[in-house]
Length: 132
Image (cartoon, rainbow, N blue to C red):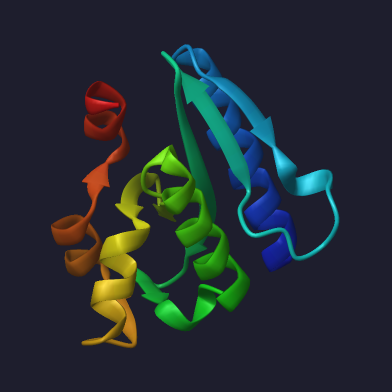
């Protein structure tokens, strides 16, 4: 049986390859020191994206899985003029992109996002790729 770490690392690798195939320069920070505040930096057309990848089991995402250092890093990223930080949530074979701002706002109302919430407050990866 695959561990959570192996499943997460596999998704990070898969996601990096997917972004690269869409013309992004991609760096996976997985091999860096433990506790890094995000998984991926992707750049295309002079726009950089800070992305954290999460695999969701049972079509749910507990907002407690976003660590304090991730919130701080994504806020600092935004304050430095780099735009919004993003979460790539993998649910079965679907990837939903949700901006950090939405995650923070939702945390005031909910402890767990279900698949309906993820789809309502995020964008399917295909749509995100077209817009970004």
